[in-house]
Length: 407
Ligand SMILES: Cc1cc2nc3c(=O)[nH]c(=O)nc-3n(C[C@H](O)[C@H](O)[C@H](O)COP(=O)(O)OP(=O)(O)OC[C@H]3O[C@@H](n4cnc5c(N)ncnc54)[C@H](O)[C@@H]3O)c2cc1C
Image 1 (cartoon, rainbow, N blue to C red):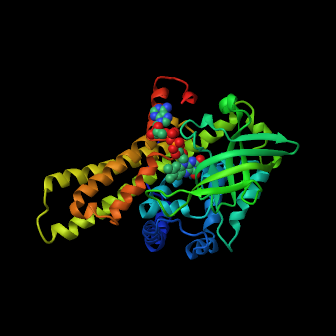
Image 2 (cartoon, rainbow, N blue to C red):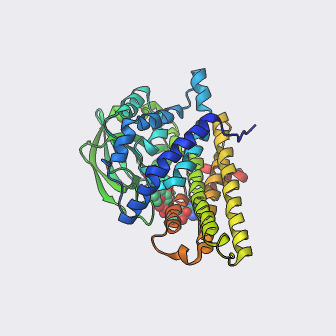
């Protein structure tokens, strides 16, 4: 049965994030939003995180997602992992979601590497995060200019020549690629094969033929870089084929990507709830400081209804995230629940922040206002890792018993 009680460990984790959030993440998020650029990789904050072993902890959290049930003690910890990711997702995004993504660690490359990577690949690429001298990043490149929602259409080609794979193509919106030590990139042996032609590679950043071609200018979440990357006759050694040849029998390559999305969707949803909670707390404080003690609240009934609605959305959204995470942790298939959380939370978070802006009145429509920043930040969460429309299609197809892979 689903248990919503926070353990002592959860509470400690939240407190730790709160300290980091209050002192570093929120101020840095605001600073780099104003600058309209990503936090530089050599920023003292990232250096400090490396020194304290933060990135090592994040990388080993990824390793726990690998689903290896051999060790009973480790299995016990694994069952807590999706839930812990949801808690971390909500709390870090509460302080600043852009900074949360900018933090050192394997990032979106973590789940596929942990789920499908060979022992040797995990050791080779995840062990770099043990470094206490400097920060490291991983990145994930699936999206292409012509293939976002419909990833079956990716065109980046991979051709085997001797003991190497040659990659050619372009990827878009790759988070932290400008600083990543390695990128997990998805390519196809033949676009006509659809998903069964997909292969994933771990490409170290110094590989000849790989380059970052552009850093996007985003409307929000400025603290991390979203990059276009190009592969031009990029030669990747065969031992960097993620999971080795066997992993691609049938449709496994594609399934792995989808599996990792199912693991991260509730976390992305929880991040939207974290941003909405940030707007809610700001608005409650604003009302208390500006109206209740000094003058009557204007439009009192409307404000009361609106803020109650925001609170309701936050509570319901969080429950959906916890349910999807709990199902993942106990091994119940959660495609529908993960999609429900992802479809619902960013949508209601956007509405919640919009309601907060209404409540704030003049203050809310000012440029460079904190809640205005949140309004810009939250939009991307409806897009990343499967848009709201795509989640609704997935849910619909499952409810009608149609094959979900056609989406
Ligand atoms: C801030 C940010 C960070 C990102 N980070 C990464 C990353 O690190 N790595 C990575 O690989 N990608 C990343 N992405 C890409 C992201 O996954 C894609 O943007 C997303 O999958 C949508 O693809 P698209 O932008 O090409 O939109 P499209 O797929 O072209 O969709 C455009 C619109 O059409 C709708 N649509 C598409 N197909 C259908 C359909 N069948 N039925 C109904 N509506 C449909 C969509 O919902 C959307 O509203 C990131 C994106 C953003 C914004």
